[in-house]
Image 1 (cartoon, rainbow, N blue to C red):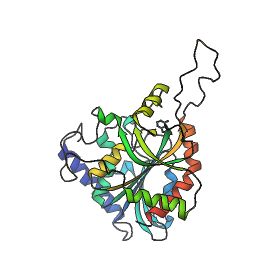
Image 2: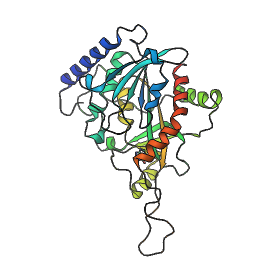
Image 3: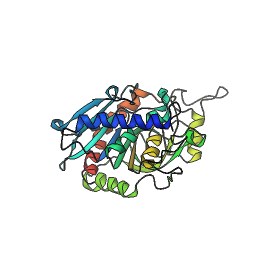
Image 4: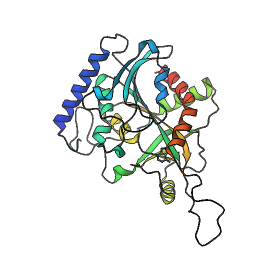
Length: 307
Ligand code: HPA
């Protein structure tokens, strides 16, 4: 649990934040019971633009006690409540997520998920920008997350470390069913059969690296050997906490760049490639995410309308 505050204090913060949010959305009969939380990844904040503009209520993180602010370019830092699609499903979008590499504890980065569960959300849709590790993946493709590797977690940096908060979930949370099979099937049906999107959809394992550096070449090879298909600096803590809260999870990576796993050019031999070829950059991540975000928005809108 909280690494720097007590469980009691943390629970109190959750209660307080929930009350503040409920007081802001409570006046709207349509919005006061959001069913789905959507966490928008890098460059994917446009998902909130699919909400019916006349229904929207925005709350900046800085107005909510316990919420930290997002410090990353491409992450705004606000909750957007609104209705989505023909069925006017009430949702809560997190535009701008909080990362461990920003210096926050996992308790702080996952705080919004706990609050969402108290507000009554039953499903969380998590999106992210990720680097392709599987050699077949190309930038611009999607990867439906079927499983994850919590690399920091295996070494003890785990969001459920500390006293268990029984009111949310069990001490030993199973994760073999973390990524809801029905929701994944629905996602594929919507993308392929209904919307007939041509963007390739892969299904694979997300490897959580704490960041903030992009991976070295040797790390890309290590992650590949360990079974990661894509790598990113988010999502897994939120998914673990969502499962601890009993929420259903659908998670999606947008492959924004391809990890470079070949050895660097040698100093001993003539080299066909330059050292900076394929080098990852945050600008490239945002650009690719922007291009693909329209497809992601369409899929999410339709999926949510079928929940
Ligand atoms: N590595 C880690 N996180 C990322 C990457 C990457 O290559 N691309 C987007 N997020």
